[in-house]
Amino acid sequence: MTRKLYYENVYTMEFDSKVTKAGEDERGLYVVLEETAFYPTGGGQPHDEGTLNGVEVFDVEEVDDEVRHYIKEELIEEGKEIHGKVNQQRRMDHMQQHCGQHMISAVFDDQFDIPTTSFHLGKDTVTIDLGTEKLSDEILEKVEEQVNRMIRSNYPVETKWMSVAEAGEYPLRKPLAVQGDVRLVIIPEVDYNGCGGTHPHSTGEVMAAKFLGWTKNKKQVRLEFVCGNRVLQKLGQKHQVLTEMKRIVPKPEQQLIGEVGELIRASKEKDKKIAELEEQLLHYEANEILSASKEQSVIQHVFKDRSIKTLQSLGKAIIEEAPEAYVILISEQEEQLQFVLARGDHIERNMNDVAKQAMPLIEGKGGGKPNFVQGGGKRLMDGKSFAIQIESLL
Image 1 (cartoon, helix red, strand yellow):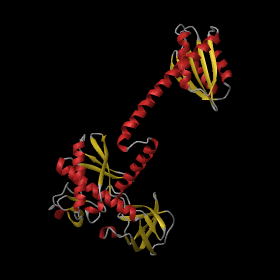
Image 2 (image 1 turned 120 degrees about the horizontal axis):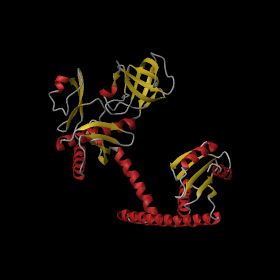
Image 3 (image 1 turned 60 degrees about the vertical axis):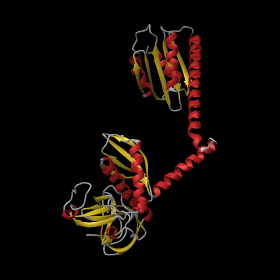
Image 4 (image 1 turned 30 degrees about the horizontal axis):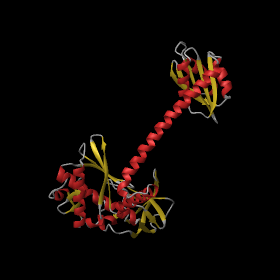
């Protein structure tokens, strides 16, 4: 069994040890050590990272009672000495987030009878799933305020190994699901919980907690938050965004929301006006195509780099004015052809049948209603030739 230094002293970030096993599995090359300060993935907390004799440790997992250190390259033979370094910033961050989660879950459970059902410590934020279908702003504000009061109170955070029977003498938040010895994390008068994760020695080291919002997750609520240095990082990110916003919109912060809202409203109005003008232009273009067709029974036109949406709008506008005509519209693009085939209301031909015969010519796909289909395929011929081939199928 590997001696787990992270349980003896959570602040041990460098250590010397000896390789007891070197192997390889589906995750990659790994070594097992006599003793280690590297924490393996478990209990919702990610693994530590760092180096062994300068070789990167990218994953740490407990497999078959072994703490396996997964490494980027072949390291050392069994029995050789190594020097390990744990990424201190990552470890301390995980300690802050995990300890913060204990306090947050404790307040939700004790004060509002809302249990935590799962915990995920992510790269940027932390989430817990709560056994409720909604949260009010009032509850969120009260919980956040109380958690930060606990942090400032600087309660000690104790860890103890004991039997399940001994642990039962404490006011545990939930029954233990293990046998044998269990590790209890204790924040006096706040939380008593079986937990294998890493935690600081006092709540003050968590620094602060900030809720970022919640979403519905099935019949529960998923709360997103950050603790410790991540609070400062989020503050820095938001300050950077605000600073850039003030450069673009030179207004005081308090007026930014209203000013940006007004800009968005004005932009939507412009977009609406542009769409109306574009629709008018398409109708003018449709009328020009109709005029040039001289009341022919088949109206065809080839465009360069027009979108399928534009072809559809033109096709609809044309058949509204030409109930006894077929319409073939083709758009030539760099590597493909797109098309719209339509017929007027006085014709009974199913245009899907025509499209099915035409599409193999360009290895295309498409479909639609009996009077109006669209599609596209490879540019295996020019648009005019494709239009002629379609016309021959009518």
